[in-house]
Image 1 (cartoon, rainbow, N blue to C red):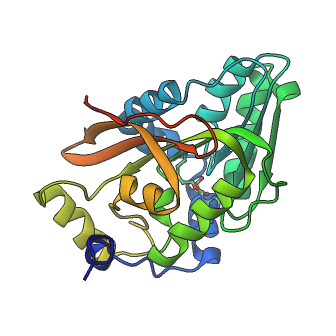
Image 2 (cartoon, rainbow, N blue to C red; image 1 turned 30 degrees about the vertical axis):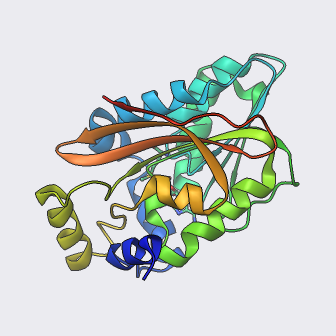
Length: 240
Ligand SMILES: C[S@@+](CC[C@H](N)C(=O)[O-])C[C@H]1O[C@@H](n2cnc3c(N)ncnc32)[C@H](O)[C@@H]1O
C-alpha cells in the first residue's frame, strides 16, 4: 500500500450532500464571524501574506465565506487588478458583498455562487488562488477534483495557497476528538483534518512554502504551491 493511499484511508469521509452544505452555510452566514473569526483569523492572515499577491494581478478566492480574504486581496491588487470569488452559499455571498461595498472596493471584486468542483472560469486565467478552511469540507474523492480545477484555471507559474485543518504529524488527541465529533454530527461538524501538503503535491503542484500552525491544539497546514511551468524552487517549512 503506498503512503498516499494509506493516509487517505485514515481521513474521515464527508457524507452530507451539497444541498445540506449550502443550507448549513446559508444558516451560519450571519453568525459565522462571531463563531470562528477569533480562532481562524491568524492562520488565514498567514496564508494571505504567504500568497504574495501583487498589484495588477488576478486572484480567485474559493469558499470566500464572509469575505475577509477577498477584502485583503482586493486591497493588494489595486485598481488595475481583480479579485474573483466563488462560494456555494447565497447567505455568504450577501454578507461578503456587503463587506466589499462598505470598504469601497466593489469595482475590483467579482463574487458569485458556484461549486468548486466545476470552476466557472477559463483555463489559465488567474495568477493566484486562495482557499482557507474550505478544502477540508470536500469528501476525499472530491479533493483531487477541486485541485485539478485549480490547476486548470491557474496560469503556468501561478500560485495557490491553502489553509486547512491538518492530520499531518503524530496523531493528536484534538484530531481524534474532532474526527469523533464529525462522525457523530456530520451535518454540523462538516469538515475534518486532511493531509493538505500531500493532496496538493498529488495534484501536480510544486509545494514551495509550508507553515505549520494550530488552533486549540488542532494542527493547521498553510501550504503555498506553484503550477509547474514557472521556475522550480526548494520547499521552505516553518513552525508558527
Ligand atoms: C468553513 S467556511 C470558510 C470561509 C472562509 N474561507 C474563511 O476562512 O473564513 C467554508 C466556506 O466554503 C463554502 N463552500 C462549501 N462547499 C463549497 C463548494 N462545494 N464550493 C464552493 N464553496 C463551498 C461555504 O459556503 C463556506 O462559505
